[in-house]
Length: 257
Image (cartoon, rainbow, N blue to C red; front, side, top):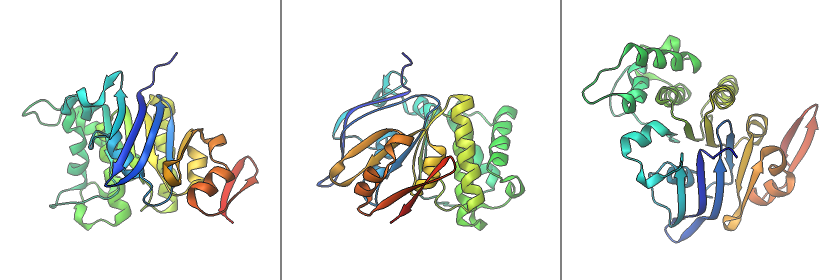
């Protein structure tokens, strides 16, 4: 049987006195694109940060490529998983290219500069995120959506097997929402990457994701193939609002009832 890239067992995640995630068992394989769905405050961001190793769970285990997450040295872990945070902050001016090249840092030796290969990887990521024309621009002059795509390009330049993305399309226009998700789907299908992303647009999630994890009230969890997990009953309960599913050709479209 194909071993999972990420294997989570009995995971409990808390914030203060609240239990956000309880008894989560999750296996993510190469080639899968997971969406994490749920209302504001349900724990999507906290879960992604926990899976990235940025915070410790209250209980349970997280295993990445057969090795406990806590046992990975920091530098090696950065080559195995990458995280796109919900917000991008720039402490100082830098060109778009230089910011994207920061994604190659985990692959560089001590005191080493970026190689021609590193620059080719960054160049490809820039163009994949439609940033070629902005390569020499200062990141502090960009719009929110443009800056979001710079963050995505840096993550692609990091090139880890596991990509964790916190609302990757939240600031993007319609065209770039679709092209970004198309690119992530290609990475999963053609290059064996695995992606977990939080997302609020149910229709984009249903269109592009292979699997879904739905977090509902009281840390109630539903997971599995997106086609069966994303249904009216599960989504309505999770969001506390009626959600109707309508068929349009070969697609299911979700609307707030």
